[in-house]
Length: 222
Image (cartoon, rainbow, N blue to C red; front, side, top):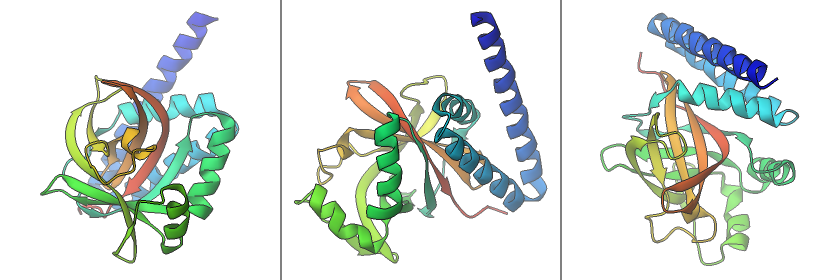
């Protein structure tokens, strides 16, 4: 049974690599179509996670491993929470909070300064105050700006064979110590304009646990 399981994983990994390669070929002539197809792929895996977390987690890990560091990403992006992968009960709560209480709509990058922040809807201001009373969001770009980060390219925290764009909240003093400064996001580009992110929880020096995935969309370069 173990051998069969390994064979299935290898077959699925090969299929994922082939599919990503086809999308990149499409992107050469129709980058928007490739971006839309990748985005739909993210969304399908997110829906799958609601009833089959293990299969969805494997699929997202295989897809993430096909990515390249999201170098040069700049300006505001559209974002979705693809799949929290902590435990079924908190996962359901996180989906509800992301959609209703603290709607997260993306990230904003400053490539020149290797910094950025998160974009939330205006109605998220007071729920954030309830959780972090001493923390204040800021108005900007038609949204609330929160949770600043620094960026750099380096090996992945849980998969060091894959280079990623690290989105690091821990070095920003104004970020809340509760939860936020323990998060390390990692981002890879699957095709032009479609980026898959991994959410890591810092457990100690250079020790992380993967707790979910998100996705970002940027304008295509062609």
